[in-house]
Image (cartoon, rainbow, N blue to C red):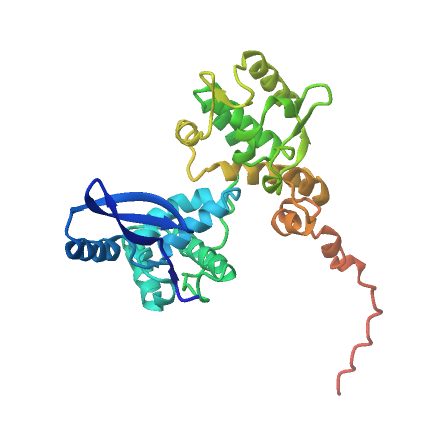
Length: 348
């Protein structure tokens, strides 16, 4: 676990009357490069410089581990987000070996990001992604244990839309595929990733069910559910099915859509809303269910939560029946009345 990865082996060989370097990996020659000289001593000197430049023992830097984590965990949604956070983290800390990262490095990074106007939540996410990558590296015996200091995690934002705002957002979408995606988010509480991967073979108009779970990738089924479609959503889907040119439900110009980031942002702006992301729509849909008194296990099933306690911890507060039974026991009218105690006699 010394933080180094050995490189290939190099040998001098002859090529067209000149000395060359042969590159071997696992005992097999992979390439041969001329050194441009017929002199043996000069070839040995050039070989030594070649090895020093090209085959210097590779340092397992933060950047290397970050990339390895993303490659080997590509099925996880977090690796997509790490593509964005890496643009900030790696230029500052990517060149370091994990063991070289100090508290001062972390604090300097936080200060620089704050000076750039970044929100505490963004800074926390940046450094949390770094901690996740390094924790993985430790399990793989590629790195020692490293603690990354982060700012206090901000409380989750409770941004959700009213039903009127939801309708405004739906109406503000200026492209059909964006409107359909918004309708699916608000109508099924699904994540945008699951929606953009949804194919028509998993939309059953006979049963009225949408199967987000059967994506063919078992690693992506976590947090995905099979849910019924509402009447209004069914109409949208039937129209989209008639016009479909691909197997994907959300498409544009005969091609699969992999992101609606720009179209969604434009719809948010046109609707006169702020601080709205696709995840806000999932949170909004679940909140609407809770407000209508839908039992927590049913909301958990819609969200694809394996444990309804997770759902209850977030959405129980929106339910009209939340704590009502407990508070009813504090009703003063339920306290048994006591006969008045005799008044004390005045002294004469």
